[in-house]
Image 1 (cartoon, helix red, strand yellow):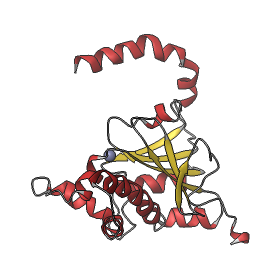
Image 2 (cartoon, helix red, strand yellow; image 1 turned 45 degrees about the horizontal axis):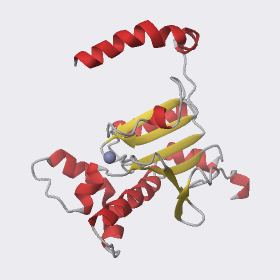
Image 3 (tube, protein in one colour; image 1 turned 120 degrees about the vertical axis):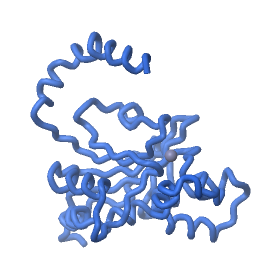
Image 4 (cartoon, helix red, strand yellow; image 1 turned 60 degrees about the vertical axis):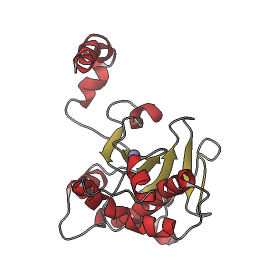
Length: 219
Ligand SMILES: [Zn+2]
């Protein structure tokens, strides 16, 4: 804990003064352009990977970068999605999985989660990805887990489209969806191409979208 508090003191001494104007502007308002949904994993830092400053990303993080489908009893993720899309009117949503994800490893390896009932329950929101992944052939557990990470991003992209605020924004052509997988060791990101239904290098294909802007008139 000492490192964390020392870090805060360093922030107050060095980083805050450098951004004093920015924080003054942000003191009473925010206008982030993207909702970024990622795993809680300590090794994936959305602002670092995308080189964004405070005020740029509205972030939701949880085990497995999961977005429960919309339902009659909405929870915290649903409320945060609704606020980002309906109130802040973000123009892009990124759902970002990552390599070596503990949640996806547990699913791919069919690990018993009896001692972690909340985790087990939470990961049921990845069931559609699990079922698709189980039906496939995999060379080994490593490949099966990597495939599960990708399938989970695709499943959560489907889940988020059940949210009324997201449906409306898509219908009005004012939002784009992105599905990414971040590789911890290489720092590479692959992005889901909704047209070819393949993951491709984001560096080589920066225009890749899981679901593009599509004005309602062009639907
Ligand atoms: Zn993870």
